[in-house]
Image (cartoon, helix red, strand yellow):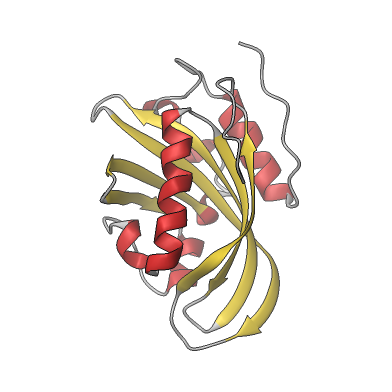
Length: 178
């Protein structure tokens, strides 16, 4: 399979993250978890997460880079990511995840999030499909990079919402919504 064209990304980290994912061997358009090596992208790992999709009710954080933990104010490894989002955002997020794993496809989003210290950021995220052959579950490999500070609020981490979403065709097409 030919490598994919890189989507339009705002940050160098997201571009390098996509290029790394794109270089991984794939079966049915998606790499397996065993192919992912943190040592191949050590300078990006602070902002990398891996989610394992167990069901519509359980999307478990399997890995959270130290930068992600700093932003959240705690280590979310093992947590159900759906429980960490407000109900209105959770519904939208679940639709995004479902589209990514059923198709499969990638996603580039700009989200607004309040860090644990109260700083509100716009951040570019890129989320790409992965599988875990041992568990049989779909996974999402993601990278987060702040674009700018847009405000301040209470000292509590929270995803406030999605400003923009673009789908990335990895060979199976993309949803017809954004």
